[in-house]
Length: 266
Image 1 (cartoon, rainbow, N blue to C red):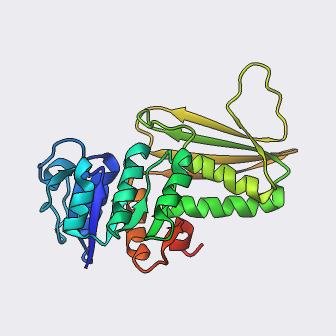
Image 2 (cartoon, rainbow, N blue to C red; image 1 turned 60 degrees about the horizontal axis):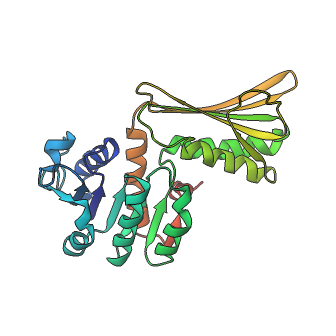
């Protein structure tokens, strides 16, 4: 039985991950953390419907006590979908208690070196800007397309719900990185206004509105033709299912930081 702790337990992603863990016959939820509704049964606040081990049996613990509670509950893996500042502390607590990590918090770019330093081969960790299987295939397709048409004009468009805090999305930035590495480095231009003639850059554009889960499109525009590679997330289950898959995989992984492409064998 894989024992799991979840941070951001009352958030959109945290609650769905807890539901997935509850439904998994090989997993047991042993701890859940948040900054509100402390002491509330997890199922009551998240809509958990799972009947698996631990479903609805765990109460929300104060996120400030994560170190103490990881020590007492000894989970195999911590799944974190919170905010960057909180994620750094959660990673440190997991490392101090020998707990493997699955980290899907977005907007981590400024903290990447710090997080890598904290982990530093102490525990196995999967860190990814997007845990969707489809998105990881999307990135692979981008690399393959760029190898053939990397000299075309390239634009990246991402669309998310009105509550998303970071822009551009981590998925869009990863797409830009995949493309740029394939063609030896490109300047990134974020949106355009005024006099902005196109040069030899990758354009990145972010749109926010409504309840859109997440759309990503890369446009390769050549003379007289274009190719568009697009991924659309229809529900957050795409991310939650991938995170649970990563939680199973990480337990047998070497210590250190891994990507979702390793989990999927890409």
